Amino acid sequence: MSTATLAPRRHLLGLGLWTVQTLLALFFIYAGFTKLATPADQLAAMMPWTADHPRLVPVTGIADLLGGIGILLPSLTRIQPRLTVLAAAGIILLQVLALLFHLTRGEAAVVPMNMVLVTLTAFVLWGRGRALPVQPR
Image (cartoon, rainbow, N blue to C red; front, side, top):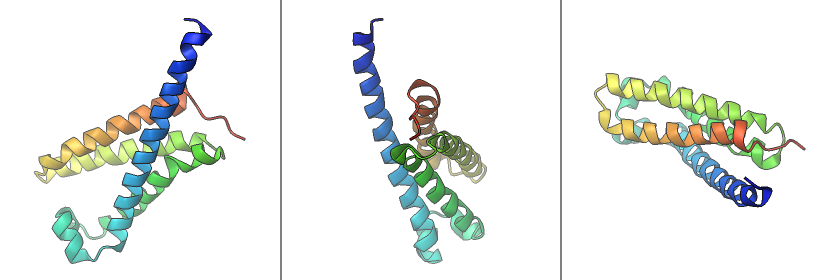
């Protein structure tokens, strides 16, 4: 393919990556904040597992916050943009563990969301790791 053909594809890929990174960041920052700031009884009404595993709530809340920040901020600032790839790998691991956790609890209705998050995050992992990495300052 010619360079003229590749340029629009790279632009479209870049736009897609920034969009997915932003959506994932918003989702995980919101999820982390919700887990850390919502009273336990209200949180249990939204996420039943939190009543059975209260010590897991702050751990997953902090992981969500860090993942949400890491999936976007390093690329956006171009300060250590490789951290975005590491954040994506961490989010995938967290979501696979969450998927298994929910399956063992009989909460199969939550699994499609985990799969969507894994898929979107794998796109960022591939895109920022191989296809269109952000160059550091």
